[in-house]
Image (cartoon, rainbow, N blue to C red; front, side, top):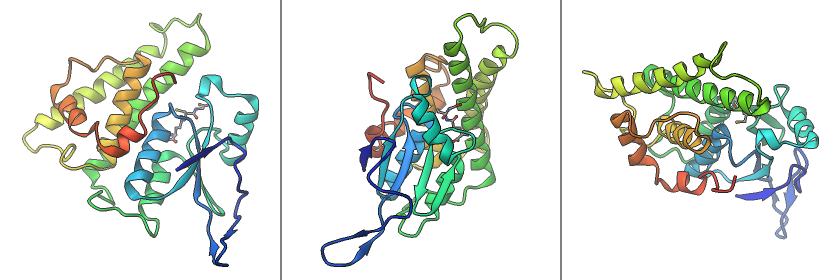
Length: 235
Ligand SMILES: N[C@@H](CCC(=O)N[C@@H](CS)C(=O)NCC(=O)O)C(=O)O
């Protein structure tokens, strides 16, 4: 993996002629920040699947420059990262990107489960919902210091995160236990990205609670691909 700024050395669809005369397809490009849990999930997955990519680094949302905003918007009408650029193919929305990568020729899926079972899809949706609640609460509260986060829709964000952790905890103890935590896959990657992002931003206190969920986190947090993509201390 290499990093460039948002311009990058390649243009869309470029191919590179190596000295032997053989045409090589340039690596995929991934537009995104080092802090986004959604981008981290895709970086982790690329690493696991051994799919090389070039990270076109953008600032975290609250520090995004106007130029970066426009670069992202050019590729994604919702102007959110991650965006994957694979030759002529551009993909946005991390869950769709994940499914694209898992089906990409050359992806080394190993024991990563795909397609997911209905139960796994539900677990992934719940984790995504908790991330979305946390990210929305974080950006809204940081973008306007005068907002009262105890009023209006805000308590729903906390309730949604709490409800997700309670639901996962109950599932992990249930009579027909969830497959979560059985093997390293997309749900486990998403859970670790979610929990570490929440901890980093102080957005939801899961430490000291939910022992079964934390046990899954502890089991997978040191996977090589998660260590490689961990949010830097100073980010
Ligand atoms: N559902 C999207 C969410 C992506 C997302 O919200 N990314 C954030 C960064 S963590 C972003 O780019 N936010 C910019 C904005 O909301 O304007 C996905 O899964 O890719």
